[in-house]
Length: 242
Image (cartoon, rainbow, N blue to C red; front, top):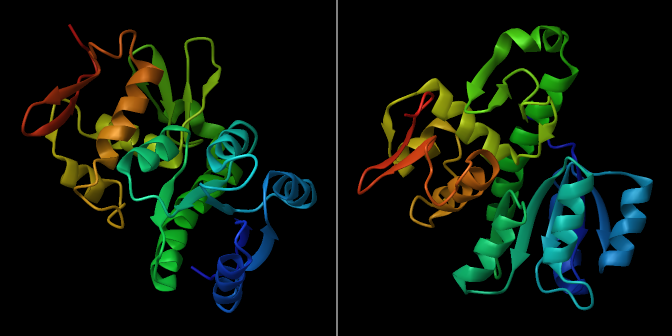
């Protein structure tokens, strides 16, 4: 993949922002920079980027609020960048729709690797939406309880045909589950099948994503019938729960 995508860096520390901009710009990315929420919105009005690198601990409007704003309005990749070591901060960032997170201080090479991973998912989704194969979307839908998973369009539709907003990782998890019905899939296996090996297998990101999916597709997320937990082994998708 050529590194010619656009990236918006939202960071209020000018030194860190400048370092990221210089490093990524040197690798072919088109860079916009913002020091906070107002500047971010001005950048978005001019151009919607492929990925936003969003600092969690911004002065003024915090990164979590901005992540919600982005996820509700734009189909972009979001990588939360945070100095916080508390796993709770990372979980909250993922809960509001971030695709990945990166803890400061970080090696610029890790930033680039995570950026490339998120870009692959964003660009694959865009390619699917623009493909002539989109015409046959109906033929590539599979049932997920009361919902329909549109494999061609990378969408989840409710019973009335309305789209349920999913992150790229959430869609990939659902796709993998529908491809392996009634099979126990370990967390590590799910990481492999979704091609998200950049995620640490023990950071519980899979558990967080599945909890979010359950809130979107289960009638009772506390007593799931579609995505069951198999204690000590992983998860299992039941296409026709009792």
